[in-house]
Image (cartoon, rainbow, N blue to C red; front, side, top):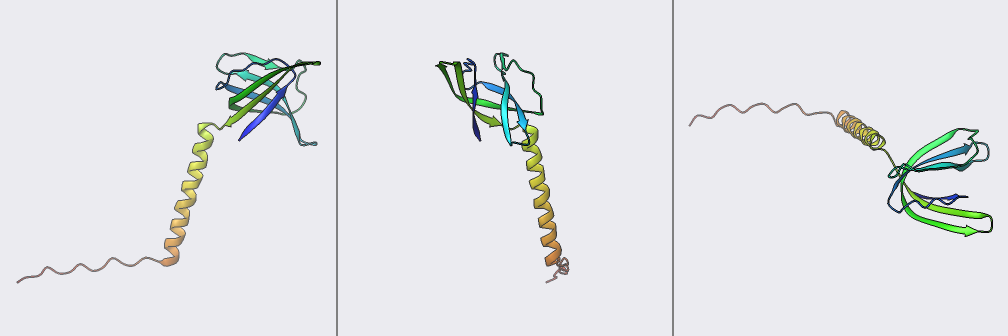
Length: 126
């Protein structure tokens, strides 16, 4: 899922770079505000001057597009970021799916029961 982040600063992050985004969450209003973006390829951190006053959500992604605009109020940057999940998160989802599939197979087996193994045929002598 991609997200467009808007900063009131000049932050020319190249397309394809991995970034770490820190957002301040407003649980009452249901909104969020970007506090900092760190370019993980170059190590440059773009952040607001004010310190965050609420809970932070930190996530990573890859830059799809960057647009820096000069306005009357100063520079403005719009960065479209494709959120990237961690490998541990994907592994957790896969394991939960495998556990659910194994449980469903066991339940189906219990429901249908199991046939006893057929008796072995005696050896034939001609």
